[in-house]
Length: 227
Image (cartoon, rainbow, N blue to C red; front, side, top):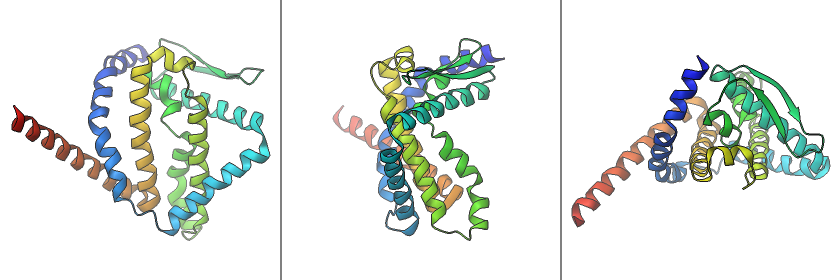
């Protein structure tokens, strides 16, 4: 089963990259529709700032270790989602990185997942509706989400570089497209969720779709005008 899934995912590698490039302008334009001047976003920003403070007090080695664990856990989650048997996670003694035992060839989603999927933030988003009910919608709930978002971005920034084996394996051009485009999408989803929970995410995706169609029609009109 995993071999067939790997074949399909890897077969769709470049078509997915091209589709994401088509959607990228709309993903960037969609940020214009967010109202960042409200308590939820202020709380989220406060949580992100608090993460920055914890980095200063926890020290580089501790933060790097936690980022490596998060990185390998995300590999593992996507391995299981694509029906692979994933083994234990190993962190290098010198803190330079880690590894996850994987049975099978694997696919680009497993390789690049840590660079576009905020695992802890999405887990928190799944349980957040229940937390909001218990906490009566308190603003502190969103500061925790901001903390996880900052944790994710700090991990991505520290681990995306030219010597990263995952990126080398999938190729610099493809990896760059996937990381940039999917992070643009994921960030929009996080903002939309902060604004109006999962209904906000649904509305956000509809906006992105409409903007993409509008952009495509504009390009076609432009081509027709000059050809």
